[in-house]
Length: 242
Ligand code: F6R
Image (tube, rainbow, N blue to C red):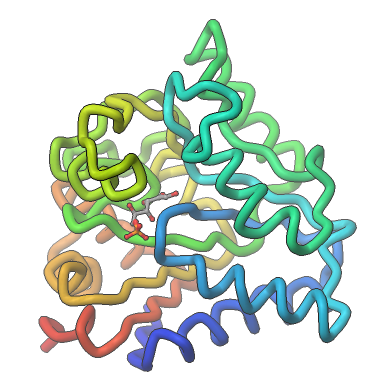
């Protein structure tokens, strides 16, 4: 595991540069997309490179990490809409080349299986962007998740719903209780993992991720087993590292 400690703006440039290099080497690359606050500056930098430096996503594919269950199609916090707004529309990425798990499917387990099959059919994920929750989740693999899990339905913890209430007018009751999420096994199959974490509130999760024993209670720790994992953290998030 490679750990880089730098200011947040530099971390975003490093993550964007890794995606840029991948796309120039392999225009049809498969990129794993995260939502939440952590990747926003990366998406800003990718949009800038698209506008100013000709970075093209035209042949690339995108697969999202997760999706809330039951949010209406037009809801601004539905992750498919967040990804469209924050990155896809800004880099002229055709909507049909970016996919997420279908949180509105009538048959959710079938939607999860179909999502796994779609990732496989695309040849697997080349580079997966990740954030980490204050409780150590990656994607929405909450503490206690199977280390070998695949895309499935999960119940969000109280902590995660409270953390995400800021996207729902500060009202935790508006945060869905369930999601569909890539599993830890799904994420581990990606060829390069790039995780971003900033701020003091992530310090314990980052400490466990990098220095803790591998445990389902800190799901991100499975990344210690990955042959190519990059962890990008600012000083505050790194403050508990030894
Ligand atoms: C989002 C996701 C989550 C977030 C995590 C951190 O797609 O998979 O694991 O990365 O909850 O969220 P932020 O970045 O908002 O602190």
